[in-house]
Structure formats: structure tokens, C-alpha cells
Image (cartoon, rainbow, N blue to C red; front, side):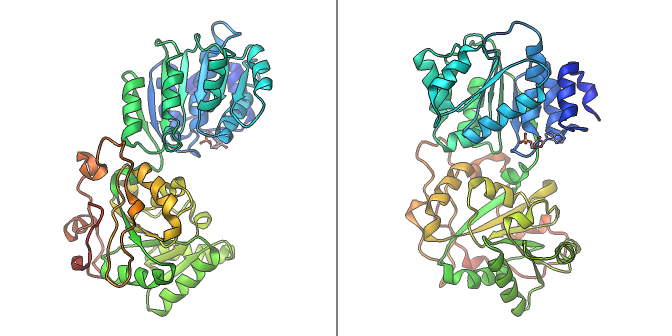
Length: 427
Ligand code: AMP
């Protein structure tokens, strides 16, 4: 399929060509037609999927017709970087259109922005706080907005911006098109979508599978006990293929070495390897010669092995986004998977933000002699209305139990699972 089928205005098609886009990405194929029809769209997709062009192209197409000189599209994003990126995408894709966009975010002088807004822009790509600031100062008029985009809504929620978003929406015409994009769909985003979108078309792309098919478990542990805990889990859990994540290259190497000494079929993947060694590691992991791969985030990008049954975060990922990306390695192609994460005392902030992203209390596991007492900081925020995914009907009963595993594991069981060691503190 090519971009031609969208029948974009020639000036917009020129922008697509100039950027070298030949084939639409999956989210573009799915989202552009309904957006061009004027439908509201809820897109479950992450950055990196091509989602920016998925909403920018139809917006440009729409704005080619009709009047100019006032704000007709408002794109709200959680960070300056994202606002700036979107502004750049509009500038590049719309370079021949003479449509103008302004990036509106905090941390820079508001006066320059006021001047830009006076110069009659058609599109704003901004962050909620600064957009609200302009509304309050009367320096922006949003009464002509036809399209509202809420980008990375889950980040927006994480950063406490949803009340600002709701305030901004009150200044927009009720007759408009609304598009909401989010990598995950916690309850608060779902309820925002219910309030703002009318009969939306749902589009799901990329790493969304883990949200529904992966069970998340957390182990409070001291740094010094992590390797023993890892071995204990590997010994007692029935597993197919396991991807272990570490924060650094040297730790990936040393953990792999220790597992190798203990007799596991293990390989590692990190930036210090030659291309040949990387390929050997990847091929061996794919064809089952290695059951375990210890990797760093960067090295693991793009690993697409459908039968990874477990992701173990030996080191906590540095952002909630990185967590979503890591666990996206399991639960692929509708298979179920388990994500185990080791949490040290230093990881407390990350654990809190993960609880928010997952929309549930973290399920802390207790393994005698290896884990610490359950931290008290693991409570999901009280403002959540629902108890979390575990109580949702669409979770499919994917709890890690011998029975559930039997359904999903096509290979012979190599290790047995001892459920007597497991207890859950968080519930
Ligand atoms: P995004 O997810 O919108 O941040 O896009 C990720 C990257 O993919 C950006 O560098 C885009 O320029 C690029 N991109 C978007 N759509 C396409 C496409 N159809 N073909 C090639 N690259 C694309």
C-alpha cells in the first residue's frame, strides 16, 4: 500500500515524499482514513510507530480547505520535546502548504509565543500548562478549533496534567473532532476518552499486547541478592524462553557469566559485542539453543521472538515507557507472558509511577531468605476508581499458574513450578 490511496492534497503529498515516506506504517494505514472522514479516534500506540504523521496528515488535509488566520487544530502533548517534535513534523510535512503552526510550551519566554500567536497560526502544538496560561491571559483564541489531539495521554496523566487538559477542553467548541493517543490505557484515560470522544474508532498498534496478555510481578530485593533470586526464580518457574534485562553492559555480561557457570543455556546481548557475536546470540536465542538471554535496553530493541515467555527486569527500567517497551518483548502475537521485576529501595519513585501506568497495586512477591519485606510505597494512587487490571474481565485469567501455563507452553516443561513459595502481599 502506498500513500496515494489517501488522496492527499498534492502539496501535502510533496511533504510526504520529501521526508522519504514510501509506505504508511500500520497506525497510519488504520488511523488516517477514519480521521479523514472526520471520525473521533482513540489510538493505542507509542512514539516510534509513526503516530505523529497519522494525525498530522489528515489535519493538514482538512486545513487546506476553509479559512486561515485562526487556530483550527490544537495538539496537546505532555512534554516540550514532544510538542517541538510535532511542530517540526507539521513544518516538514506541511512545508508546501503555507499552514502555520506554533509550539507553545513553558520554560521559554511567553512574549515570543504571544507574538507568534498574533501572527495568526492555524495549528498549535503545545503543553497543557502553557496553553492554559495563554488562555488565561487572553492571548490565544481557541473558539475556532476544529480538531483536538491529545497525544501521549498516559504520560499526561502520569505528570498530573489531566485536570489542565479538561480545563482547556472547556474553551473549545463542542462541535469538533477529537483524537486521543496513548501507549497504555489506564482507567483515568479510559474515562477521559469516554468524556471527550464521540463514537470513536479504536486503533491499536505496536506494544499494546503486554497490557492485556502479560502478568506483572515485583520482587523487593537487595542489590546483593539479585543473582540468587534470579537463579531461584529460574529453577522454580516453568519457562520457555527468558529475556533478562540489566541496566549496564557490564552487568549483562557478568549476570550471563554467572548463569552460565550454574549450568544454564544462556547468552548475552549488549553494545560491546561485535556484529557477528550479536547475530550468534540472537540466532541462538531464536532457535532455542539458548533459553536465556541477558540484555541491555538498547541491545534488545527490535528483538522479536514470539515465544519469549518471561521478561525479568534484573534492574528496574529507568522509565515507565522503558518498562512497556521491555515487556513488549513477551506476550507477543497474543501469547501470554510474565514480567518479573526486581525492585530495590532506590527504585521507589519508579515503582510508584509504574503502579500508575499499570493501573494497579504492584503485586509484591515474597521468597523466604531472598526478598525484603514489602515496601510501603507500593500503593496505587487512592484516586483510582478501579482496583486494577486483575479485576478486569478482559484480563483473560492470565495469572501465572501451572494450569495457565499448560495452555500456553507448547514446548516440554523443563522446570517445575513450586507455588508454595509464592505469596502476594499487595492484595
Ligand atoms: P513517531 O512515532 O510519529 O514519533 O514517528 C517515528 C519516526 O518514524 C519518525 O522519525 C518519523 O519521521 C518516521 N515515520 C513516520 N511515518 C513514516 C513512514 N510512513 N515511513 C517511514 N518513516 C516514517
